Image (cartoon, rainbow, N blue to C red):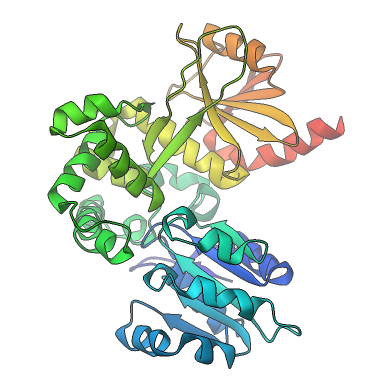
Length: 403
């Protein structure tokens, strides 16, 4: 079994994630495992190494490995066989161009697993260099399936970073997340090589904290710019840097000609609920439940769990200028599926959801809530506990098959 990195608690299996990696290795010449810092990518590599799946691991945060590989990368990598892993590959972005001919050799002596904490769009030439050769896989934080449904409150409060989740107390977890935020803006972003060097850590931290108060809202760069005495272009640049390093989710609006004025700006979310709560100063369950951000926090947490279970591709929200809205729409199997997130004990059908059903011609929709009972609220809409989200993929398949 494969496990998440932990501190002082029982090991947390991540077998479904490792199975995806194993399957990817069977069909692609290279894999790129992408996700936030400290989300467990390095631990996954080491677990693969312990099971003899990796023949050589380069950790580019290790000075010796970095200098060794930077000196003669093509010769060193070209002599290796089996499965070669390169951790935090964005620190040597020139490797992507070198990997292209290595992946094109016949017969193929080596496959490559790359991990990174920045998106491909932020590393110049990645998409062009490895197009058609590399499978990109998002590595999320811990999910409900991994920690157990009974641990939903702790996962929601502390977030999915393994170290944050597994610490002994909420206070220690909050301290870890605060240190993570500081280290990220002061050390990690400059090390990624994606900043121009003129972004003050204090300004980025302030922007991140302000964005937490806009969590789940329509992006308004001008409003943030006024608050920070900056331009809207700078605000958008900050947003894209945090999104590209997996700290923010920028959810795209769905647009089509439905005869209504639609919202065309994206929504922004702090991707990890624990980081959101640290930025808002929420330490305990009582703090969270009494916070004005309680509902917005549930929405963001639910969206991340749904996307972790069902995949991140083709995800949108829908909103009209008149106020009708759907929190999340997924395109799967050529059909549209809707999700609304309500932090109430007994959610009911709303006029907004009726409008979304009609406008979007949804195949099916679910209202995701923190209870434990499933029940219908409409012919096509069901109230669904978040703990049951893993069942939805199979239900989609059965609905399409007509069974």
